[in-house]
Image (cartoon, rainbow, N blue to C red):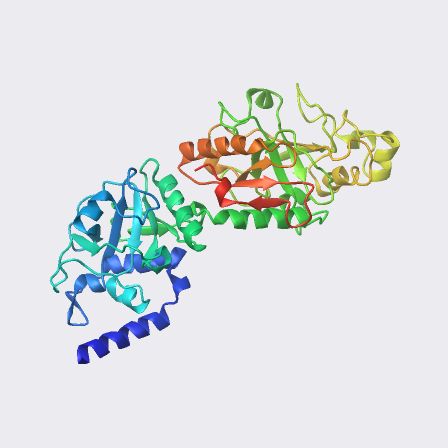
Length: 435
């Protein structure tokens, strides 16, 4: 009885000091690394070491039943699931599968009222593998899950983990973190967390896009053009076979890649193609910054030899009145507006309140960047334009999968509806991702 009371007191203290939210994301990785590094002989003087140290890892094979917490035929036959036990001072078997899930240690699970039973648990140490009695009939939210994982560098591993993350969300309405497992890490940091590897990160991306779309400040705080801090730079593309984020040969020859700039006061309702990619605001730090060269209020039909035609300032055009004097009924295609704050804001002012080509896109020219450097670009999302062409979703998913195949990284697909009310122009749905 004394041991039991002591155990319950300790467990109560753990439950009070480690809230459920602490087991998400970076904190989950930190706690798992601490457990991996810990090497006690016993727990609370009475219990085996795996009650409070080491990491319980369940590998999931591609052919295993779904959702991932469903018992495999082998587990059904033996009445238990086999977990690998990873600890710094114990030689374990190499992980053969690219993904899986993680259980809390036994004491933590008891403190969360999510206890499980170890088959053959007689107080003896049983690593490197442990058998957990099958949990038939237990709802997934009642399992002591810390997260799903993927083995860094394994083909298809992140994709598998994202599918498992989504399955748990669909079943429970809660998100488990995707954690990166690096089994060859010599510093004991076995687990890592990357916010860019989470399906739920798409909600944050959509929120950022909506906030930038709603921000109509004519310039940034440092006096530079608004494209550096607000609005959304977007490029429609045709999916495949070339990588959509690479400048096309004609764009390289013409010294410019054509984008659109959408913002609440720009008035665009359509985009040149039904799918494509979105850049971050250009002041966002990346290893390969891109340069905005010039802009046109509408589709300027740009081409060789240079997509940036003579600067409109050479015609004396510096204000809206100047522009209207030269182009009273439309917009100019024979001159471009520069990248400085005043000229770029003029590009937007020309559109406001005009009846010509309502809702059409503008044309923003960005200098070509080197080929095949997707991880060095300010890419923020892939998109499909729902109001324009519902069929754009498969195209956006194709680009997303292509990006994943090249980089091993997840980049969200967002839906755009430029006719939607403010705050909902950009939306994200985890069910629309191409995995």
